[in-house]
Image 1 (cartoon, chains in turn red, cyan, brown):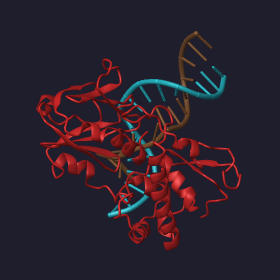
Image 2 (cartoon, chains in turn red, cyan, blue; image 1 turned 45 degrees about the vertical axis):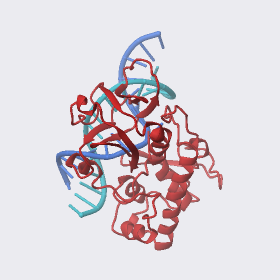
Image 3 (cartoon, protein in one colour; image 1 turned 180 degrees about the vertical axis):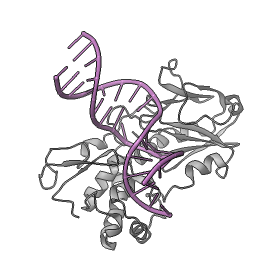
Image 4 (cartoon, helix red, strand yellow; image 1 turned 120 degrees about the horizontal axis):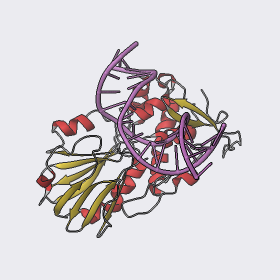
Length: 271
DNA sequence: AAAAGCCCCTGGATGC
DNA sequence: TGCATCCAGGGGCTTT
């Protein structure tokens, strides 16, 4: 499910409320992608300082150490004063004096990992190869072009890989390429500097727009406040196979790249 | 080094 | 109604 916008919307929906909270207990359900890496009782008594985001990871800073949290394909967080007993897909509860933080994740591709610090091996393993943050000032169009030049793979897959720029998943890769007028199959190395600049701007624009719309709710995404997103209603191509392009009315096409669906307009997007 | 495939897992939609 | 098949927002790992 969650790409950068959904993760950021989640972060914004509980970061301020949980900051300063004291952890009282932790409950772990079924195994997620990796073990928590520390005995759950080791978190008791620690204080939540802040919640940051790196790519699609949430970093929950504690007074000692941090939790790295990933929502995988189907994960969502809820943070509330009281919650019903955990259901079969609620795999992590962190009870604090300000409320319960709960991870709901039917497919269990998500993860909760404890690390003693950002330089600790468990953290470096997950964060070490991530590319630049697209909504930060450090995302530079010329450097982005230089990075694309070094890659021979189709540009859609370079966006998804996350080692050049983070946070762009399957929805927003298709959307950004539409906004930039670039075919998803075009080899990254063949993108000119001006077109790379267009794509750079498109990535920033689509992600920021999606954050402002509360993310995309395809099935069941909601923020930690329980609010659904509505970016999906304004998607230009994602999920619109056969429907008319919103710009030129050519039917939107689908193709498969690396086992994922890609959506594009054959008229608006050029090789 | 980079690219391409595989796989983890569950549930919902579709088709026979 | 029942059952099989396909598909889904990610990404680490292994193989080419």
